[in-house]
Length: 89
Image 1 (cartoon, one colour):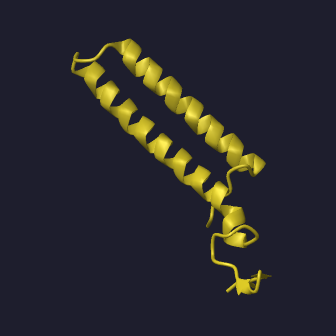
Image 2 (cartoon, rainbow, N blue to C red; image 1 turned 180 degrees about the horizontal axis):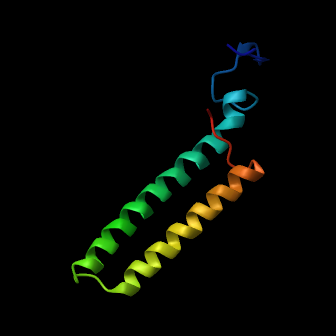
């Protein structure tokens, strides 16, 4: 495991300030949140496109959904390339 620093005569826990786990926590949470957003938008896009094919949903609804999905995927891709959202793998 990692080296733990003593703080005030005791060892640091896993998520206390100054540990590697704490430093990676923000990137990990951002990665999970962006993945969840992309999955939800992808499901919404499929649902709205199927609705358009069945004539139960307006085409504008599908266009907005696909635009939001494209924006979310673009932001995620740019973030990963720049290193803002780093995968924990």
